[in-house]
Length: 616
Image (tube, rainbow, N blue to C red; front, side, top):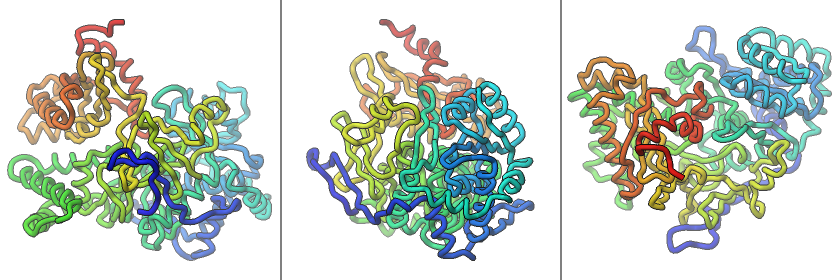
């Protein structure tokens, strides 16, 4: 890796790392100009594929045809009365029309504002008011009605359309009288400093913040990322199937990344259809959150049954992990390990690749840490996981492991042209052209978020001598026990979630005499697990009291505790009957735990663990 580290701490850690600048952009390098270059370079090549009515076939959309439709919808947005620089919102699952509207908004000189399709009326109203939205395109009639109810609480005149009824037709008709020259004029007014979007943080604490992201934030990072990771999207065979919400900044950036590469983009709006869609679309790379990888592994383990078949699966999984770990040694895998690996691939591991379409070269994982054990398993199984790290405020990725530069257990080196610094308190600080412009209407907060020009991420981490970043947790989540021991909850939680019975884990113990954990059971995996253990069917609440279930969880706790000191180890667990979900407000749309909400909701349970409420 090229770059430079600054002052060093001993022989192992660098306090600062600067990724190289691979290419420089000018002020006219906006999202529309980058899309136009892609279209001009290969107008007759497919750029997007849309799933057909029959479900298994995919209809190709050529770059020139997509660009023409984008221009038509851009004209329609102008025809609906949206002035240059104004905002309109998109509330929809991940589908072709999301991408179409997003690109059309940029071409029309507007700033699209995503709204998660699971948002409440209050959240919608807050975003519409704060962003001064003029138009909302919702996916379904029920979403549109929810938006209209939110609009009714505001003193604003906001048009609401629905994709499943008239939205695209209305926009197309509204654009018929708008000359293409007017659309081009709008695009030409844009510069890299122009606002591209407002993305509202999902808010693990407090009210959402409108993160102002510019065209330059996207394009500077995108141009350099294509050069840095050319194996991913800079070739015609590249295929990305998006199923994570496009309201999330990482999915949004990868949408742009794929469209400005040379490959094809697809969408899956319904996660229930994910496996057949993966099989028919055959992506070459995927974007996932760790929970998806945990689910795939746990499901494969559970479906192997019990007895001999399960022993073979476990043997193959351990072989894959051992093989991957050996790849990181000077000696590499031994001949006997290679032979075992070939057998494991034939018996078990080859089937794992078919679950994700049989054509995937790389899996990009972000949003939360992935356990090292699972990362080694997938690499050994032939599906390298490129773990990355980023925030809404950094237009998505700050760092990512690449096909050439991959250290399991880290989130990779900084992407060009980003710089990363570790503060004296261990906080990760970031500087570079993808860092956001401001928090809308919050100048004091914007100012407080920067330190000498460096953005304060709020995450704790370290840099090694090669510039690889390791994230150890959120600064605000650190637990300090009554004995004064600092505990990073994520170090314990991430490994525990790999257990097939566990859905979510929240480690507690701040100002308490020892560390404990709240655990929720995975309702989908429970029946399979019970069947494999020759146990009768039971509900989640019944399982929470079952001796064998608790014994299995206790064994998982013992394994995790071996990796930390006694003062950091989990001494007690409490299984709570209610899972943490986005619907009950305990998870963000990107599946992060709202720790403060959970601690408040289950305060009585936590108090019971310690024999009473916190004193003083």
